[in-house]
Length: 340
Image 1: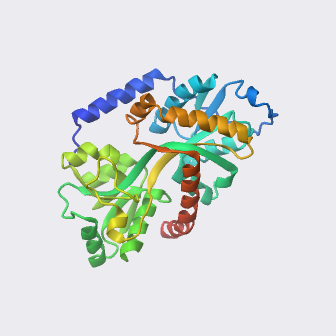
Image 2: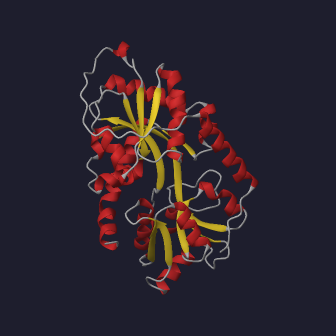
Image 3: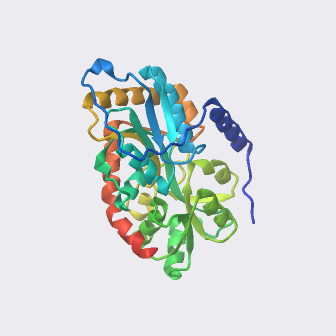
């Protein structure tokens, strides 16, 4: 199997991440099973008066945890109270979301998770709906791309589309799945070009990349940003990105929309939410504090060591979530039928 070269840049990135993890204590794991009731004051001078909990519905130590820890660290300075991160993993993120749902709408619990997955799980009857939460904004956008090995005969998205047309259901494309946004991108490509592929679901990014480099699949869907060194070294080729504009630092990689004429937005956009019913003045306080932190250069520099920084304000993030809910409705049904 061809092994991915580990560059000096990657080594520096790993060191930076390890140092960042050491700076924080890591999130506690604590599942809240019963709804909690608590009165909410309307006195704007009385929020916040106690620690705030930030729920991450994934395991400790991952990039979501690190992003939350970093935001919590800076929010404490803005809000004047402790912000404690709790990792509540399970059921592909549903348990953490449901825990937040059953806590009071008082601003003392913030949910931090990927917007696209958040929407998809709600459509899969995860026990909650998108409109039960209020998005506050986001500061990470990890765009997916279509990649092939460096020695692949395919040099463009058109090349692989032609191969799929000539060999229906034969061209293997690996992606996290089966019911997931990255598999959705494969199915979108099929529809755009009027072709069919052999879409193969994997559990994680490392599995997808290993399958590609090992020659088990012809192409893969993978975040572009953390493949910068592999692309530069010729280990992989990026054929297109799943966004509606070219990415900074990857301006030579076309968007899928440029090639197919149909725009798509396929990315892990990690942001923050509070429960619907939270008083508007509390939402405003949290939104202002989060936005202030997210625009600090110190925070931006630190986030970029974890995942690609991309600021979304409250209104832009709400629009993004609403668009994703509309786009995903049909695709969830298609994926459920395809991967029975």
